[in-house]
Length: 187
Image 1 (cartoon, helix red, strand yellow):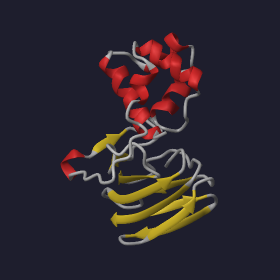
Image 2 (cartoon, rainbow, N blue to C red):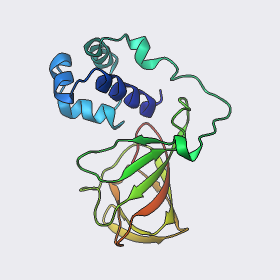
Image 3 (cartoon, helix red, strand yellow):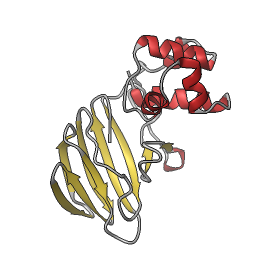
């Protein structure tokens, strides 16, 4: 199941209904924290939880998952059609752009990250899978466990994402980072 697509669909329907996370939590008897993690594709909801979310949103489970298993052979995403993926708000100020949002059955998730100066994510976090990053513009520091690695334009890192990690921008302007992750969760 494409967790990013499911997360975006849940958030989109909730917002179209004018519902806050707090209201959805009350209706589903799930915590705001869990729902936030679902919408930020940090956790996959169980089937009972997904059923409660669907019911609270006034849709069927089929409405939430339709199209997730489809796998087009080719997806072209013009730069003007990139989708912003909300992640970790308010803990992170990084802007994530999905580079293949309309491909729902993918094995990897390509994202373009706009990393503002400073420590845009307040804490290093682990997730399942592997991650590849390439600095497209600027300089970032990759905090990986208890290590720090300075990466400049063109530098790459491939990592086991089970180790807590985050990006820090030591510069004065935004850095741009290509990030591709595999596994159930990301970044």
